[in-house]
Length: 150
Image (tube, rainbow, N blue to C red; front, side, top):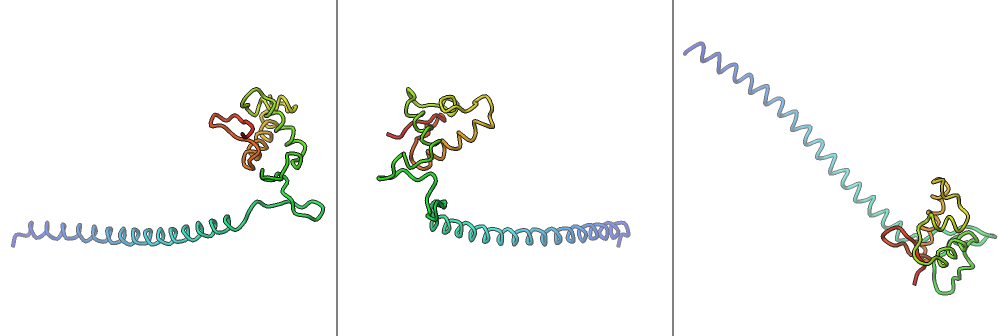
């Protein structure tokens, strides 16, 4: 046999052995990560199911007033009058109702006396407007303006 050819075969076999070892390590890493992802997927599914069950079983959380459970901002329903809202929310609804059309939070702030030049003072008002939308007292248009429900 040719010694040079034998040396080439030995060198190539060593290269392939090294490659096989690297691939074996990568295969172990891939399988480990795949197993971890499967576990993460099962946990996510279980958590999603639990959260959905919790959300379905809990309604709005009421506050306590005089030992009785009440919602500070109740949902708009038959028999629930605007006068049941806190005074500042009543003012906000009145400002939206008196506007010539849909209004931005800044315009409502000007009417109710909020310093609209300071964003930190305007954001709580915007939050109240959104809360009134969530409870059915107002409607928010796609352009971000607010109006009374029809």
